[in-house]
Length: 355
Image 1 (cartoon, helix red, strand yellow):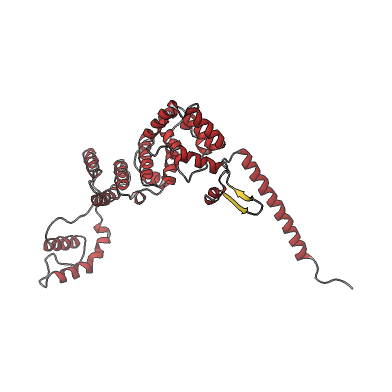
Image 2 (cartoon, rainbow, N blue to C red):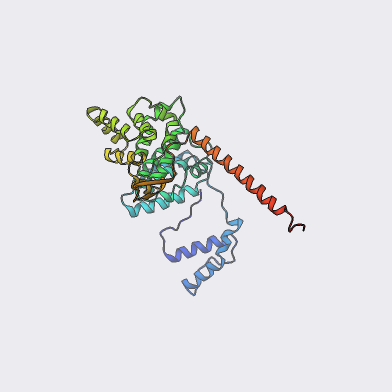
């Protein structure tokens, strides 16, 4: 590990150190300071500073042992407790330098990255650390051995909470789906609360309308028979009356305590009125709001009191939808073939005619 910083020494001492270092790596420069003063010193140092790019200037990485790793973990723990936004930015910068200075095959880089997510979330800079799950995995999987499944689950869980707190709900949903995808049929029961968070985040997100893919996740399947799974099924395939019936059947003692538990599991919680608005959009009962969401392309004829729909987004996309898409594409191909044959006939037709 090689991280260079200036010590807290006076300017003249820094000049001497720079001269000595550049001389050591092959630069044609004297070790002694110039009698003409600081400006001439800087002029000479800048004139040969590109020598630092030579192979002679490259130093071998310092091996990191168990004791060093424990120091890095303790250091990260302290930086995660930055008391202010300004200091948080400083800590994030330090962590970023440390992360990229460590050899890529070291497992301790996972812990540095984990702390970077913590600190960046506290200061609203999570997008400077996290871009997508694929990039994160490729960065961390260079370690030997790579992070364990449990470690990745812990990191994804933190990312989901951090992205939600920073109001990046779309990425948060993707991260939660990534997290639930790490569980198998054998350990799906361990992801019960994560599955709850995933469903509630999707239901509460005003921009999320297609949720049928959640039903295929093993931890979500494990919830079959519970209220939360019943509610998800309603939002996937039923209409507003189905939700109202569900709410009326459970709105008293049972539903109240269930909703309180849900708010503990997922702080963003669920709101009945918001659920009703969403179900109205999903069941096409409020055309004006539906058009704003771009889920439907339509025009209104005020004189005839009619709405003409030209296209819509499917709430689910299963076998029937794939079959319809196949038939549409097959029809297009047939029509294009006819157009091609007609154009070919026109091109090859003789010009003019016999008298």
